[in-house]
Image (tube, helix red, strand yellow):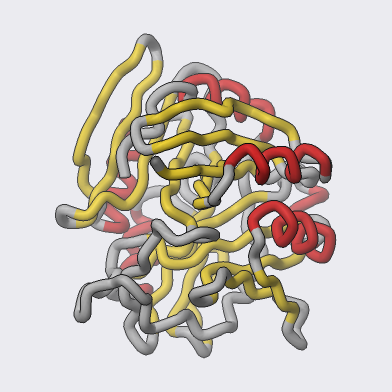
Length: 287
């Protein structure tokens, strides 16, 4: 996956008004799928983003929204945590944001979960690098977990899975096929994620006043980060769809707002949106 080319700079500027992300206690209590169709045998997912979680003010309404727009199957368990699946396997979840975060001004947001070798070590390094470990490290049925609020306020989760996770085929409909962190400070973001997660720069481009860096873990591209004037720190997840225009029409009819696009990009088409509760996400249709 390459940089989403045109429109990223505008996306960063428009996201500046959204404010920072936050984290309440994680409910990732469902075992992640340990076998991913299409993934080579033995291709473990360490260093990659393996789960996505929507933290929102209205989980039930959000579940109905994304089910209609993406075609996901979303089922709530006894704890109130809703598991997102496509036609292949579980790939994310939805949970309620806590009142202390909303009173502090936090909005609904998507947070990625990164497969790490050692959650305790990752948490210690994150603290030493200026982050706040908000929850954990702690043991869950899916493995050992921690949530981290980065120096700029954007949140991600670290998971040391048990059993190991295999890499997924992200070309399938409904999959999360790319992630980008809009960041207010490119240099500090690069240093932080390189130190904490072992991500390395695969490319570093400057367009006008905006900068885009693509991260990799080994040779595998894992995420990008965009920075520019007025950019807020927030994660943007890209979701693979078949028929972007149809999905976009459904999203708009249910109260979403377009942030950027639709645009032609190097590997297809994309549009960035705000869901009705303020979480940023993007739809992507491959070539």
